[in-house]
Amino acid sequence: MKVRVHVSLKPGVLDPQGRAVHHALEGLGFSGVEDVRVGRLIELDVADGTPDAALDEMCRKLLANMVIENYRIEKLETA
Amino acid sequence: MKVRVHVSLKPGVLDPQGRAVHHALEGLGFSGVEDVRVGRLIELDVADGTPDAALDEMCRKLLANMVIENYRIEKLETA
Image 1 (spheres, rainbow over the protein chains, first blue to last red):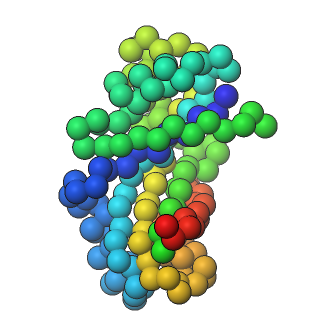
Image 2 (cartoon, rainbow over the protein chains, first blue to last red):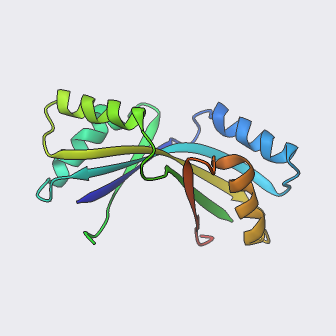
């Protein structure tokens, strides 16, 4: 089973990487960009019977830093 | 307009970060994890009229390294 975990900084947490990207986009001449936030996208291939609780625990224990980050788990249909 | 750009390594490209996460998950006792790939999730807030071509160009020029990475652009409905 394929699972995608989206990890993004909580609103209000300063994002220097996002700011650098924003600045670089402006430097390249792209106008109209108002905000940029950079997060992580983790693609897991787990055994089919893996319970949601286990996925949640993976995120809380390792994949996301719960102090400054939010996560969202997205299960992909087995193709 | 909110736009999400998903950047992931192309299949076949070695992913040391993903391997480290995989190893750490096993160390924490999570079994059944077969593969882990780590990518980036970039959230852009752009002006409403921004054409798709401009978004595409941002990805090709800055957000993704086209040699080793793929990207996918997802436009979010303006809430």
